[in-house]
Amino acid sequence: MKALVAVKRVVDYNVKVRVQADGSGVDIGNVKMSMNPFDEVAVEEAVRLKEAGKISEIVAVSLGVKKCEDTLRTALAMGADRAIHVETDEALEPRVVAKLLQKVVEKEQPEILLLGKQAIDDDACETAQRLAALLNAPQAAFASKVELGEEEVVVSREIDGGVETVALKLPAVISADLRLNEPSFVKLPNLMAAKKKPLEKLTVADLGVDLTPRLLVKQYAEPKARQAGVKVADVAELVAKLAAAKAI
Image 1 (tube, rainbow, N blue to C red):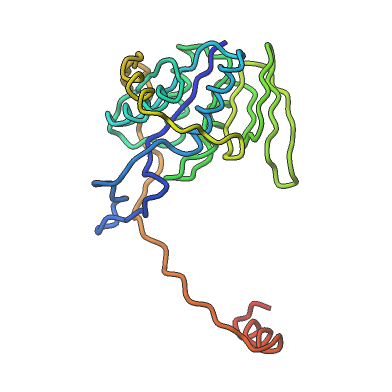
Image 2 (image 1 turned 120 degrees about the horizontal axis):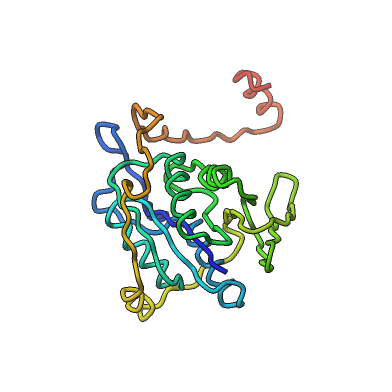
């Protein structure tokens, strides 16, 4: 059984994001980049399933600039067997990402597809759902537990009312939430060994997907600074202030 895991290169979650002076985008010059945390959880889950003997091969795939190879090497160091890089310098909307992944899936024919539930740069939270729709495959978003069988996978997923458990026929698409697991620390020997694992290069032309954007971003802006709160002496003063602000 084969698992395909999609990973994205994003600004490291510990870095304070800065907007460029002209508002045209996010400043990533000399900024630490890393694997999207939700995707890291997805890779870890695939590795654990392989260690449990449930799957035999893990293929990591990333879409984007040449430096995405570094992200793929991290996935290989975590335990993926091989990697596929669809290289492009174009900005990719979730709609396009899903179509590119669809082509890779059709080529690789995996039984289980694992993605992070969202990327921390655009917070779109829609690629997994779009991919499932394109493949006409069952899906489970926001997974907190995965139990893989021979013909189906049972997924516990977080919903507003608590936890929902669903059984999906394979092949299936699963998006990982942070509670699914805690990724293991990647050791230096594994990083060195990852350099010898196969990394296939593809182009957008190879997959035949139109990258023309349908969204127009006019400007990026940082959120306004949060104003300091005030203390009130008693409930009466609190009610008066809320009434003055027309909050009640």
